Length: 220
Image 1: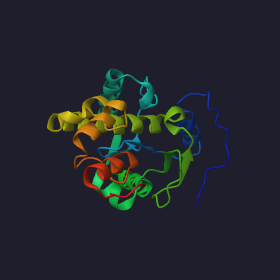
Image 2: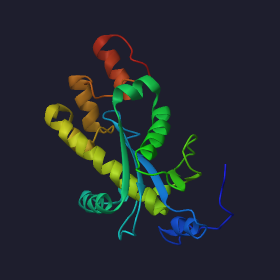
Image 3: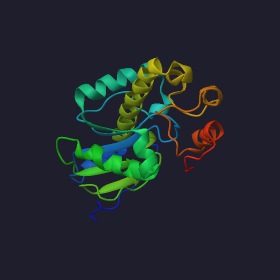
């Protein structure tokens, strides 16, 4: 696999340092890829690929931003960047496994871009089978602007889906915890059992399912 000539990118040299280092070697456009919902026990996994066409002030890891700032940045990204989004439902996660869905989702998100990027930055772990040279960046959403943008798109998309889902299943409080394991979510599972939007391969859900039905649903 082709890789650009070695270059030192200081992690304190700004969120656009990776993009600028790659651009100096003619490797543009650059896509960043990230996901939201990996650790949740309910709701989909959402994966986003983003190619920034201009610098956007205020970009940061989505987890470090308030919901209001995330929403404002999401609008700026969607208005000015090339974006591909993939939503993987809980049933597919149960059937195929979380990591496999994550890797496949990253490939699919890049494939939904309207063009093939020259280079791809992924958050955390390498992704084989991408259509261009790529680099896995540790904590990429904190050090690479395009990955931070992908994290914002993925999280805002998923959070909005979980808020909508909460109107159909108010007993679980999805709007508050977005499907992650919290004390309130655990109490709801004990009281009501899991719904069709829970991930039955996750131990928090499968233990409840065993208690409610006397049979197991598999533990990941």
